Image 1 (cartoon, one colour):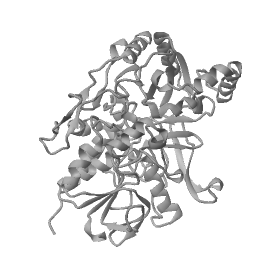
Image 2: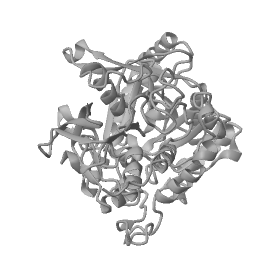
Image 3: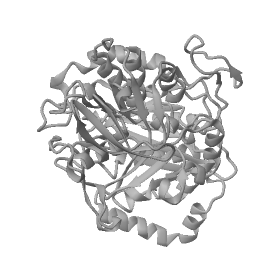
Image 4: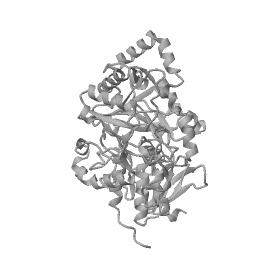
Length: 521
């Protein structure tokens, strides 16, 4: 089987699925390896109702589509399963503002805005982008928030990869019958636990679905431990639950396992197994959180605001700050334990002390909050992102708490650190609370733990002009390693400032457009 493939792709998210389809269209024999499961509609329905079916924690026997990882400086939420992050993303598909393309981290390598324009358009068509037609109470409150912050003109429904047709089974509306049957959105609010309706345009229903029709093989529940050289190509060392394969070989390999997955495989190959000892020293540098902060507002008892798509509206609070609202399904009720009093202070210790003081001042109030049974019906979460220059770094070494096993670890880097406090986020939370009559909240890992929290981790194997500055060149090929590529969020060298899924897809479209058509044997 090792000789059966021209390209092995690790990961089935936006970078992996886009690459798989476009390479198959060019005649390449492709396999995709995914550590998570293939999720049925029934699986996703359970994931929207039960934390046990939602979360990914294999050591505990949990194999849902949502993973959470906590490091010293950052907490990360990401998707796992066939379809990657698209399984649990809110289907928001936005192009960043011009400042992203001009960021000094990569501006000299290409005219990125011009270079990516056609690829953004192609990605939008593939992902079925449409403006959300539904506006509920939460959206009206966000509009009033935008007005209160002087940004009324920027408020709008979000463009989303969701089929907003009738909520009943219908033939493929996107690919002239080549795609799967679909059902229109029923506004169940389960976008971020996985759409059981078949309305969200997750990758298993477009790019990856079409790739499989062209012969791409998908190996689910297959984890890649590391990569080694094998002749003129590479060998992937595997650990699978559903097959006996222990390795696969191919002339070319694409890492598309998301930031944490791709970094762990590359670090393990360089520093643990030493099978790729000459990977660039810049590996793990320039990790970005999308300069993200999360705040929330708990609404009045008896008011159910959980119906609708997870995200349905947005605005720009200023030139670099983007804000969306979020609804949660029932299975996210556990996140009430993450929320606490809204507190301002740029000094971490003083801010934490204020949080503790407020918790002690009103203990019964906060216990009531943490044990509210219908919390998900009342909560509005605001995701705040910025196109600002701040960063962390990741390393990889033996950890005592893992009994000497290797593990990723975060650390502070040069320049401004990824923020754990954004005054713009707190201002938005207060304005939303004023509009809704609710109570503004911070995320305790940020306010009490001085730890950034993000669902949009970027960087670590970034595009650069040399191996001293990054890991891959402008074609996404790893410096000094012909045939080895990184095509996912870890290659992005700057904060995107909006939800990055469309940008990752466009970069993948561009990367594979540079590959030649496969020559016949």
